[in-house]
Image 1 (cartoon, one colour):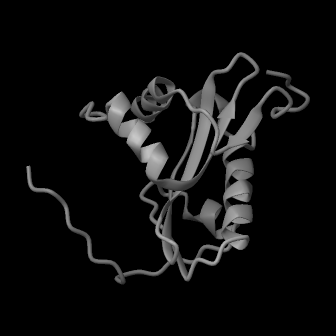
Image 2 (cartoon, rainbow, N blue to C red):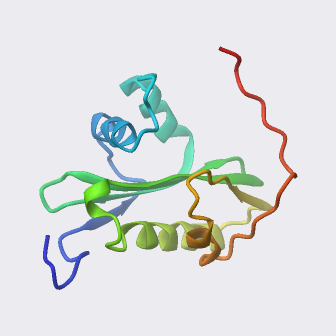
Length: 143
């Protein structure tokens, strides 16, 4: 990676081809699939039902960043804003979120939500998201 411009060798694609094995490996790497439930078939379906996604790749084709929007024509969630640990603080998540915002601004969604349990809510506030507490009810599958 070029030290002068961290994003110089990074390409961002919207709704393009994503190697699901690389995406699943990225989920595992950041700890989002410790139970190893993600399959290539399920991740392919996830991409197919996403309304929008952006992927960041190195010049060698390695997937290092990802973000997506999922929902219906009225209500959507911003999900899976992730960056490979070795490429954090290079602007990949920021550029991905800017692409997500362009998509949101060009759409007619009534409600846009984002959940964050990573402790970086300040990052999302930079993009206009506001924190609302005690407004969501969550159902979780029992073990």
